[in-house]
Length: 323
View 1: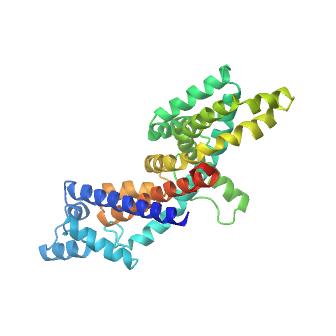
View 2: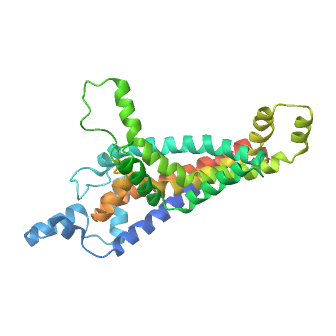
View 3: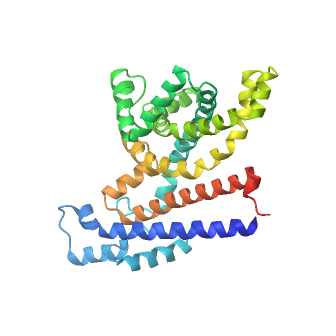
């Protein structure tokens, strides 16, 4: 197992490195000059402009950028953000908790509701309600996350006024407000971005669990349990849900890239101060050091998720373990 983990970790590291090289090449192929985007129409001395280009690394070639970034990475220095004039690691560290909170809650809701609905749909495959749930989740999966977000804002923020359209907290909330008021305010602000991400991703665990549970529901031990008069809830939990759970583990590797891509759009729609919004802003401002560092963080998160999914799959499925 240790040898397999080392080999798989090496493969993940090489994949991340290759993806990062592609990202850097694409950044250098973008038209325009990052420094010009910052200075706009302000006059500047050519010597000062050249010094700024050298300091921010915007005058480097692709390979010089890769070598400089790799050297800085070894020392924990990923450079200075062109747009914010602060250390890149500090900027990312301030945004990462918001993204982790949104992604963690989405994962929890997706796998709780999705797995339960998947088993329920498998036990009632011909019912109208199961077909309706399946159709609605597929529609949600087919729609881009930012479209779902805009629809939610228009209905629940603009028309009904139930939730705030953007932000993470109310700036007018009194500092002396109690903990319950603060939690309620945070819950109201995260409700719409969370709903947008859940609607966009719920179909994946639901349909995977439904397929697995359908195969399990036809097994002889399930028919025997029903013949013995075992309660339907117990049949669903003990004889259908748990045996059908193994393929769901592999979803983590597929689900994380989808969540990362969706978070960029959803955070932009709701002005949620996370890494996804940071990446969108840095790309628009041609802040190459910040885009490179943020992109590397997201690539590493995806590879770690894939590695974790492969590890859990071998843990829960004895057939995948080495003899």
